[in-house]
Image (cartoon, rainbow, N blue to C red; front, side):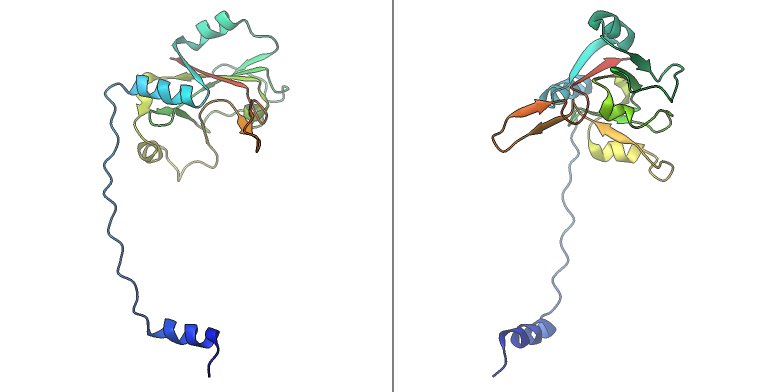
Length: 176
């Protein structure tokens, strides 16, 4: 009498290969107002869209601590800033994420160490889905990039949500 393992292995050898799976029926999302969809998704992720220029937002929040704007000149050897200003190459309406392009030569450590991140986004650069976002990114050219969607957050088993535990506690997207 054969053992169970031998029986299973013998059966596997006689089983025909499975039928190929059908192609998924993918209908891309579309938004009548991509900026409003982006704003809703960003807010759901804990971030905020302000329909004003980043420089105006910075003036209105009156930040405490250092501010580094990588759209202008900066010292890459500086300590991580309290407020980091970045320019996003594109935004994604379905999840409120922005793509931070590696063309900007700034120390990567600044993103998780800044207390607040302000991001300048061109509303015309908002795509509907992550599929469209990845198609727009030249993945063969880059070595590093990041999608950001809202501030850093974590929760424990008791479901206590903490913002800023592993990065910025505030993420605001402004227009450019």
